[in-house]
Length: 258
Ligand code: DAK
Image 1 (cartoon, protein in one colour):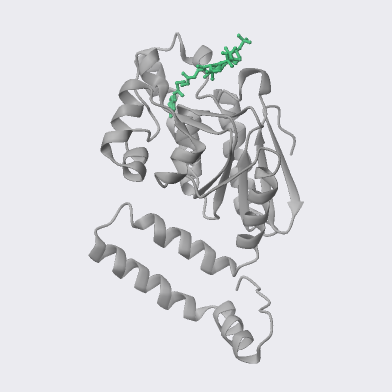
Image 2 (tube, rainbow, N blue to C red):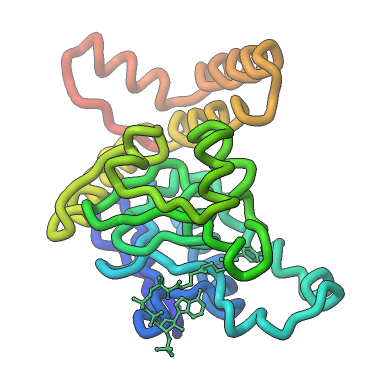
């Protein structure tokens, strides 16, 4: 499928790569771009050749936020009726891991989109921020919630209230970012990480993602119960038999996703 505002490709090793592609607008997340992103995410989620999805922008910008020009004249009723939220929420329903490879501006809805991914790999130039307050609004896609979970109340407050930006190093120190690499190599390194995840047993990967995400939604007791059920369920899979047989036989496992 061809898209206008994103690029989607399969560079091999089970990776599905999506590039946000509005470079002149610093990858501002217009409704059309978000619709295409949702479609591409769903297509890779359903594609048996893809085991891990990588979402990136370009060196200058992952995304500088939702498209301000597209929403400048919107009213509250229009925002409600247009059901923009459900397109944005597509990413929350993707069962395969999604890695954000972030360089340059990662602001507003861009930062929220990156935080909706499962891991973030950053370039040294990455800059994270929630500058919505400068526009007379607040974050609308988890910036007050996911950010607070990730980095704590004080710093989240400062970012949301006073447009405090985080450098890649700060974001890593506060646990928002997994790895930092030079601008020249961050995408290759993120691709390697995606390929490593794509090379694992697909059902175990899927349930591992689900279990970790439940830690944000359930009490510890409920989360532990949920984890135990998923753990037990994996003993019904051919890949559990294969993985353990391969360990005993001292050979690599060959996953079938069954
Ligand atoms: N929207 C539209 N255009 C943008 C943009 C944006 N967010 N950010 C940059 N651009 C455009 C600029 O207008 C400019 O276009 P031209 O004037 O050349 O046509 C071009 O990209 C280059 O930008 P600059 O000339 O400004 O470049 P600089 O290097 O000088 O500055 C900057 C880069 C990133 C510091 C600056 O562009 C900037 O401050 N951008 C805005 C950042 C921002 O405020 N982001 C938050 C937007 S509000 C929702 C979910 C989420 C959201 C809303 C709804 N729902 C689920 C419904 C999220 C809201 C937001 O993200």
